Image (tube, rainbow, N blue to C red; front, top):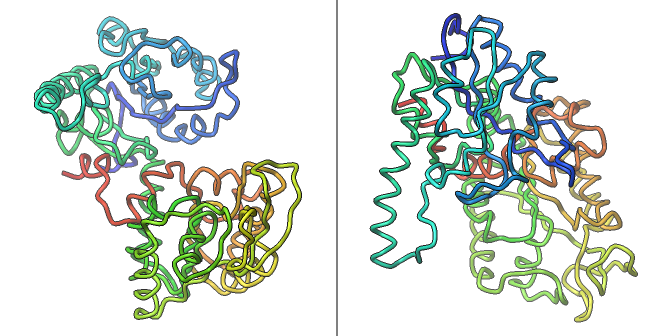
Amino acid sequence: MKINDFNFAGQKAIVRVDFNVPLDENGNVTDDTRIRGALPTLKKVLADGGALIMMSHMGKPKGKVKAELSLEQIVKNVSAALGVPVKFAKDAGKAEAEVAELKNGEALLLENLRFYAEEEGKPVGVEKGTPEYDAAAKEMKSRQADFAKKLASYADVYVNDAFGTAHRKHASTAVIADSFDADHKMLGFLMEQEVTAIENVLKNAQHPFTAIIGGSKVSSKLGVIKNLLDKVDNLIIGGGMGYTFIKAQGGNIGMSLHEDDLMLEALNVMKEAKEKGVNLSLSTASVCAQEFKNDTERRVFPINEIPNDWEGMDASEESLEKWKKIILESKTILWNGPVGVFELDNFAHGTGEIAHYVAEATQKNGAFSLVGGGDSVAAVNKFGLANKVSYVSTGGGAMLEAIEGKVLPGVAAINK
């Protein structure tokens, strides 16, 4: 069922949202992007004349109640965004009374789902690989199913609009869908947009297609890189992961971040890229430092000639000029991960420049650009470029798994 085709009039809808928003020390929301992202779906339910039940997680309480992670802190923000007073159920697993009182056009927010270990469905306090763990895992799977059924019992229809957790088979993101038939479960507008954006990149890409993969570790994105080799024309690898590729070729990378055990994999990726005609582009020089801090001396060295007591911290102007040409000539662009230590202002220049190149390719050259992952999203937001790229993904982990070719449980549960 498509959400646009469903009439919520007289229906109770339980919507999985991602309200895992950042809070300051006083419990005030510092960035409401995720709340605003869910509004089209939430307002559709209310505008149709339905009753709205929202559920989400916040943080990682691991099955324990923690006041600092209570969703009660954001009720005022959700109320203001929705334009209706939002009621609150202090116990997600015992909200029958609050649900029974909910009238059409009203909204209810359940307490943090992860206060229940059953939400994630992982045994707590038992060591993996032991007979005790296997028994606990079996019991937890049963408890997770019961918890999902309890959540499902609150509503007539289920909507999943939390792409950030779509790669998790949790009670509220996947298991709950088993309690609804095909006509009463659906993706929300945000989820539909995310899935469409990724499919546009992976299945309908115009060429040249360039992927920019940054970040610290090859190990976290090796599957993504391998899957992309069958799809892209250009693969730019930057950030900390680039140094593993340089060292694997015999370069001197000083104290730069790298993974020795993945050097052979790096060489295999380079060999495969060459065989498939993919232009794999690494940094040619790095902005380096002797200390991992913002206010320190910076020097530029060829990336394969970094002195032993220096480490690479950002992409050099020479590297950026090379990458700019590739990006501006592209018709499809996928960007995940920074090309430097973005959290330190003095080493954020390279990532900021990539953000500008992607925006320019989109606005001036008509490229389709998909940006995802914490620092990549932070970069386009920091420079006011979020509305100048084609799509900014709300879920870095989910986006990576989709690009890797994995089936997302949160999407599969709706489609089966």
